[in-house]
Length: 204
Image (cartoon, rainbow, N blue to C red; front, side, top):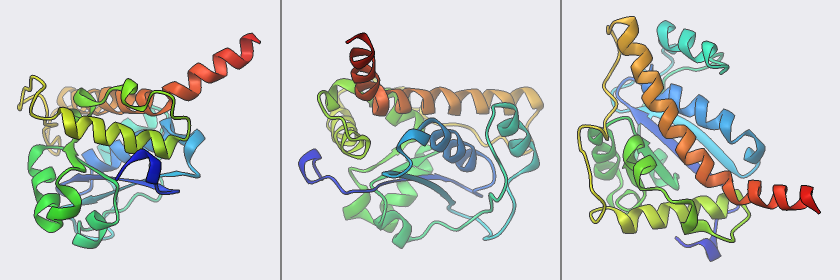
């Protein structure tokens, strides 16, 4: 995969265990942040142990609504090899979810699967310098992050978002904050070149 042979549609798959809390939160937040690129970037989610059709956790839906997201229609689906194989980027809530994706589709996912916070830590907007199309930017960002993995300082514990099911309200909000921080870093990298061009156009 490279920026010159970019797919017309870039698919991001968020993964957690039950697809009830962490991955649907990440899905909704990233979709909202990248709404301007919805024609070329598709965001979805799944769970390694999900029971298909189960509604999003009520606490997660409430938190999402507080952050301005729309939890309506969010139901769980099970992670499959086909879902991983059709994704251009897989982001797990924790390292275990990245590993699950790689086991299902090792050739496809090895260089395209990260934990959410790991990818946010590794992503650099300059990897897509000069690229305007959001899907093409995402391709370049994934390639850059994959190349950087292993050489950048890592904190494995910080790369995981703990499962907040059954947690206290404070812990649930901390989970939401960690997801939102990562989503913001990723979205900023995807959209930064377009923002820069918009500022130039406005100044002319």
